[in-house]
Image (cartoon, rainbow, N blue to C red):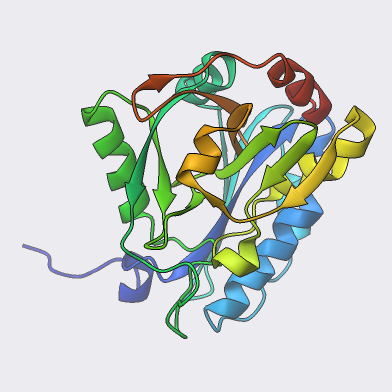
Length: 247
């Protein structure tokens, strides 16, 4: 048996960062924001900024699809383009059933070595969370801190509407990944006649919201149609917000 490992061990262990972008005819959507976050994630992992990534991303772009930029500890930079998965398109159209789950981790007392604010390649727990949701009749999970705050989903930010205020979780305060799509949507709120706010939210407060969405680059928005087995009415804001995002 050949026991040679074809890539550096650090790469196998998820010691790297990545970004996923929505490709549009106009180019990679929100490219600057994604490249800024890639640099921030690399810095959190004590890695140098990836070289020439903008030129390589633009050269690899197609009319539509999903672009993934991967940058590893061994300074490997890889960019690939693939079709948007059918499941993502269904969730954007039909919404998602979501379960809440306590991570057992404090949102307010992260260890000093935490990399939860980086988009790292260590995604095993995210995939496991979504498999757990499917085993229990849902598609996704809202992670809760030990204090009871709703934080994020495994691959999405949480956005919700209360009255005329569009909200998301403050990433620095919660110690989570800063959501690019969520931040962009909140920047558009005034043009839609809405206010924007970043605020910590408990699960009961989230349940009481007028509407809840999971926001990510490929989904855009997926409306939460059921939370912990309780159906939620569809919001008239969903198509309006998707339109504002260009979906």
